[in-house]
Image 1 (cartoon, helix red, strand yellow):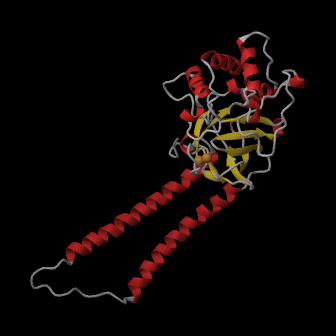
Image 2 (image 1 turned 180 degrees about the vertical axis):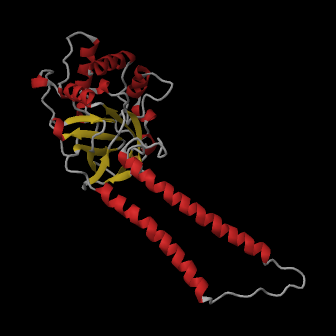
Image 3 (image 1 turned 120 degrees about the horizontal axis):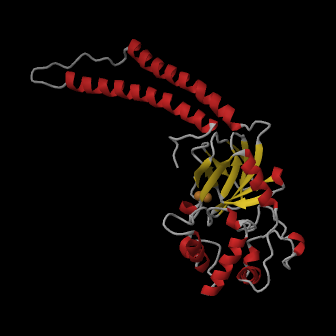
Length: 323
Ligand code: CUA
């Protein structure tokens, strides 16, 4: 994550504000510190020296050092205030994505794409204005992908707006920017910017329902565990026409407590975009997570289900079939 490496017009605009402010502040710093050093040395006490001439109450000096900072701040305020107003509102043609903060992961819903409901990885088309409509299911969170924009709060019961745009394809890292409980430091995000064609293909894939595995396969066994171990209390999977023997799960206000698992394996990361981290593979990380989630993410609402090694393998097989 870096604010020094903007990859979109909004982040560019913010970085473009930073440097003038930085250089003006640098000049002020050098001049003021230089004058202090000069005064300290030039007027230091020496044997036989009289008290230097006092300038207290010198109207000309006091007006000067009031007017100069006022002018500097007034000049800096013009582009800053302009940018604040320009960047706060979404353009009318922006594509909408809803962001819902949960302890400790981000949910993304695409209302213009038939309500695709995904987690941790936000996929966007490149060179497109995105308008995030954000809220939180539980506590204050803050969405921050520094290469694409500054940060903004997700507030329970309120909607906040954040613009996002990438001018090149790639993966951009984000993080929750507000302390939100035990695993705040593990509440991460990814934004993946794709060419429009690739994005359309991704949308088509995400709109498909989950496959129902063949009976007797490890994938089937994994699905039975999902259905019978209480996973459906927090997670959801979109099956076509009740085909897996469960009712369609209706999305409650604010979403489910846990991510929608329909296209789980299409995401490069899981567990709040924390896993897999460098050095452990996807399957190994998934095994570690399923074996005991609270040991990986302290405070996790996903309990240790006491799964056996074979059950974990079956669950992994089923999850990996959800492309
Ligand atoms: Cu969510 Cu910190």
